[in-house]
Image (tube, one colour):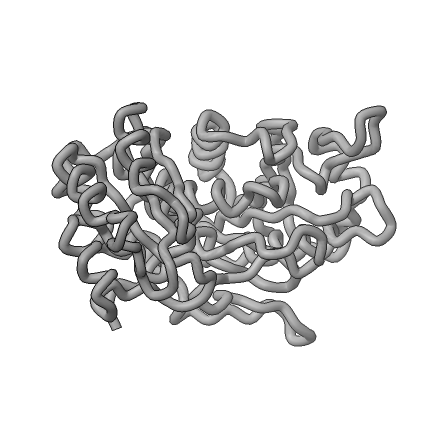
Length: 331
């Protein structure tokens, strides 16, 4: 019988009504509404946090990562329940903080509290437990009958049960009438020794570019002490250079050794800065391409890089590699 550890952090799945609206509770709230009879496993639970996921921040990421790493001993899989609003950020960061997890680590949550009759929480949990018992190593997110890489999942709907999608990468598994179907070819390599690396630098700022955004914002961020910048540019990779000239601002960032990662505002498909003049000018200014990474992955990867890699050149090299399935560099 598989031994599964469930780590709870709060979120909608464990919420109950209060005078101030839905508020998260602990693991007992989940267990009291979860019928475990159909699952052939031995379940252990540990309450790590009791927070709305909007309050799960970098400090909590370190707590969650440490709890996961400590939970590897004696367990065949780990399920982490988490609020949906920031779960993609947490799952993505775990993909960098935890190297080569020896067992499946599966994040899940729900759009409706598990205490309510129409909850999606029970099936999401069953999906997560099933993946946790699969023996497939990695960091995953289970939601609405899909198993996604943690660094590819994005919340795309506020209330629909199909709240998460695997962006620019197929789900590694789906659940249907034949059970859990995993495509092993989609699983990133995970065959080294496990490691825990929780040092990060949170001084990263995400800019969503608009036609009116002044490049002066780059200088303001650098002067404020920001150590890294992620820009959501236009289309395949466009930044304006007429009137509002981003090339000059980006060159200053490069001179100050502030890494700038540029990806696309478009949710789907990859950026390619070699296609248009505006993109080539950006590359010439020293930016790093995000290719098909999600914004969540770009931000968390840059935070991790700044906390662990001492040189600007090293960070550039790091962003030229696929670490946990978060990016396709070449085609």
